[in-house]
Image (tube, rainbow, N blue to C red; front, side, top):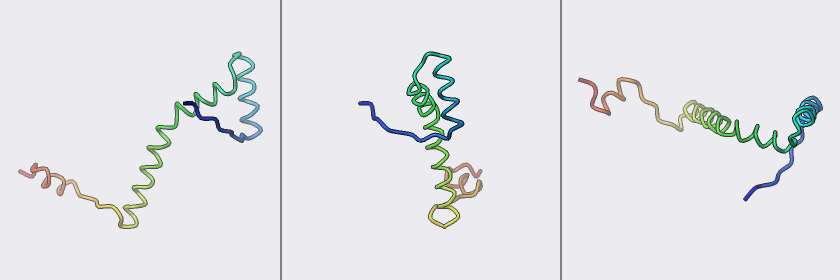
Length: 77
């Protein structure tokens, strides 16, 4: 089921969105939906990486050297 939300845009971004919608005949909602759907997975991935980096810095995540990984996987021959 679709979810409704609202977004506040800067004046400049709002003008660009208005112009794009006007010149293409598509709705502003269409372009907002496309932008979100096209980029949400990358944003989630980026946040996960940033969170993992913070966990490593804070000692909340275990890290392994390449040699340790080789040993764990039995590739140290």
